[in-house]
Image (tube, rainbow, N blue to C red):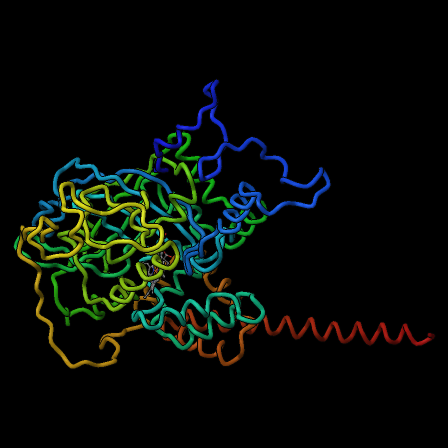
Length: 526
Ligand code: HEM
């Protein structure tokens, strides 16, 4: 994917050996010494080669992603099954990439952790990102998902607060359980996500052995313009593996890059990881018969009612040639859909769709879509021009280069013909600021708690107690209340765990006082 330019070949020495140049194409004959007055200096400022080298180095970093900064990526291919369950996929979506059995679409995937910086350990308890870019014939489709199937919040306006509470304290620069749970204890819709995140499912063993999920609700649209609601899920064909906290800590003591290493090395040795893409389909609408709203991303759609239907398989088979060019500069977004895929009214999805391209215009630059990793591998012709780092003009062959506007009678770009009816849902209502009516914040969290195996519940309680023990009493009490509303046993066990920690802290304190008193007796002769 690194762009090769014919000019890169131009600087050959007479022997055919490749020689070093500046970016201006000047041969570099001495790359070891500054230009100085005599061997001991002073240094001259007209040293263009040095100035170019050092000032480029000074600008090597771009802003990190504000979330999901730590990541690893790989290229691969998606192969369609042509069906969704037992039915032809075309019944539900006209998206070309899914239609024919065996049809292949190139993909690039970036996996990530969320909360910490670009070189933070990959063993942290944190959701994992699972972002896939499909380079389809109709332009790009990005499916920007996580490993867990639900999220902390259901309204995009809360996202900066959620993330601030999980990022380091603005004064001490340390992440703290108190800050995280201060937000969570006032956000009851987070209980389902918290129950998963603090269980062993909160630390996937690596990227190859984890699931993926689109989390938000999307739509599929068929060639008659009819829409259905869909959720996407990736199932790893290598199986699922998670880590307990002690297992993660043991790995972290030796290697904080283990997931990146695992993915890279597996692909290098030809052990290509694969995932099956499944969808859940629901008729469009409010579904008052359900005890949750289908647009609520804090809920799963129960498998028994909405089965997982396989639609294709993805294989990752090529490592990046350059981490920065491909992985760091890759830019995914939920707005990047192709014909036959559409948005639902999921309020998180709507908010996300603004955030991604907005941050990427800042993080990578306004022409980020001209970079090879982000550029569609199909016809691109726009009247957008210029801006920092414009690399080329996105014009059509034969387009009058003077015409960078539309409409025009002078051979400019024309609107594409409409091939299918649009999906045109009817929407009406008062403009309000209100949450969804069916919040039902505790039921699925409680079911998840009861569905865990004993050791998973044990691990969950231990992790919660460890993270809550230093939080203010008011936060602990509120969390116990929320856990109790999920399941009385859940609340009771967290409360008991916290009480135990308090008791042993008091015992230690008493022991400390006694020892200090004994020492002060011994000290009297002086
Ligand atoms: C990355 C915003 C919710 C998955 C990002 C980035 C932003 C962002 C600004 C950095 C993008 C970049 O620099 O390229 C938001 C907002 C959300 C939200 C405002 C809620 C309103 C979610 C949810 C998921 C998710 C629910 C999971 C389904 C990801 C992933 C990435 C990411 C996987 C990393 C993409 C990559 O590898 O480059 N998000 N996010 N986000 N987000 Fe979200």
